[in-house]
Image (tube, rainbow, N blue to C red; front, top):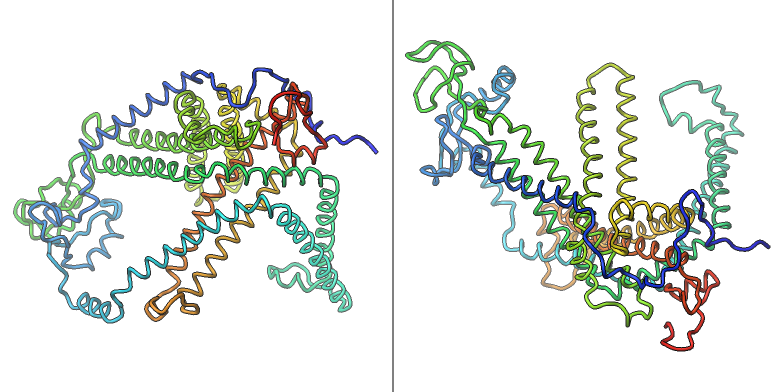
Amino acid sequence: MGKKKDEEDSDNKFGEPAQFDPNFRGLIQKRGCTDIICCVLFFAVILGYIVVGILAWLYGDPRHILYPKNSTGSFCGSGENKDRPNLLYFDLLKCATAFNVMANVLNGIQCPTKQVHISCCTDFPVAVLLAYMKSVCIYGSVGVHVFSILRGLLIAMLVSLLFLLLLRFIAPVMVWLLIIGVLGAGAYGIYHCYWEYDKHKKNSATITDLGFTTNFNSYLQVQETWLAFLIILSIVEAILLLMLIFLRNRIRIAIALIQESSKAVGHIMSALLFPLITFALLLVCVAYWGTTALYLATSGNPIYKVVALNSTNGDCKNVNGTVDCDPTVKCPSASCIFIKYNNEGLFQRNLFNLQIYNAVAFLWCVNFVIALGQCTLAGAFASYYWAFNKPADIPYFPVCGAFIRSLRYHVGSLAFGALILTLVQIIRIILEYIDSKLNSAENGLARCIMCCLKCCFWCLEKFVKFINRNAYIMVAIYGKNFCVSAKNAFSLLMRNVLRVVVLDKVTDLLLFFGKLLVVGGVGVLSFFFFSGRIRIDQSTFHSENLNYYWMPIITVVFGSYLIAHGFFSVYNMCVDTLFLCFLEDLERNDGSEQKPYFMSKNLMNILNKSNKTPKTGSKKK
């Protein structure tokens, strides 16, 4: 029987394996700033972004969008009209007809009818609607409803946390059950296809008798369709069985790494709270981008034009939509409405360019925030792996330490990776814009080329995210620049490509099942609760108190998914970090007194490796 080659997946074209370094003791503490040029460029862009925001705030007036205006251009609910927040249209039929007739002139912005401020809506239909709302709405239980939604989200958080912590005990059972379940489903599919094929074969139904038809169900009534399904499923089932036989040891390694990741999360519980910081920073980016875009869109003074003129009256000229006017001047036979904002002046002429700058800077900032979160978590979990005696050698506050190191030394590297991803995303946005313009085109070749380009750049974005993620792990460990870290991470993964594929698929399968368990379980529980089928106590509300109980159920399910995704993203980052550290450990060390392994005893047992007991010093637990 040949020698096992679990540690011999390397290929010379992907570089030589990492050599033992007597000075390497885990995370490099003495490090310097990396990618300084990109760091300076990033801060320059941020400074320019702040300047754009200030200019937008000085020149913009979001009241043009946030508040309605009457026929004279004054705002409802603001200034002298503070007590009159509503707008009344004298003739809504003109709004319906004017939108189509004058869309090219007015861009559908304003309605050519008399508009005045009013304090409240007193017309008959609204009064009837309010009376109806009072008759069907039940007051006094809103607080109870909100509290019961909140309880569902708390349950989702606890179930997610419990699932991650229990993976160290149940991961082997769950993984093998899922694998057996997939194989069992494939076996049943083969049996069902053979049964359908045999049934239609006896009925002498063939595809030649059917011919070509657009009714897909008709093809399910012929034997050739089920024979094709039978062959395809049999081939897939055979491939899965062969993979299970030849990759069973790598599956065991993946399971052991998943168990070790659960231990790491248990020792570094603060890592589960870090996504809240990332989420808060992302909210800041989105809020700043939205506010800046709003102020830029309303920069400049409004321009009014004469529209809907029936006859010449006084100073009003019979020119529709082309003559400037003053909305304060009364003209009974014409309407003076808002058209656009003026583009005079250097700032106004470059509003489009500033909006582009706003969008690009926003994408770069968002990708940087995500990169910062990944590098911080990688540094925290790497400090766990490279602690020889766990948990005694784990540093205090590993998440805070990794966060400070990332900000102090590696802003340039994180910005570099984020910039590459931003450029790819910009190209994808441009392609989507071009594709929207080609939707009405009859040129099939152009649409085919566009579809291929979109697919290629989608794959490129996924690949860049994969490279960036692993590069940030190497940056967190060794403190080198982005390019060197990306090269080393890619070479290390390619030297162990089979382990990468197996671990990735096993982890994806396990986390998918975990999300399904959390979201599905909480969703079913919330359905029985909000529909009144189960009651926790006598004080809880009844299902009759809810006019539409699906809304809180949907809210709980969506919130449960976000919570589960946040927890499992931390766990996924932990698995990736420990995996790279494990591969580095295999290449650098051999288990001798001078080069002991840092991996757990479970992993060493799977690989038939062990550490020689040193004559002096502490023994690894």
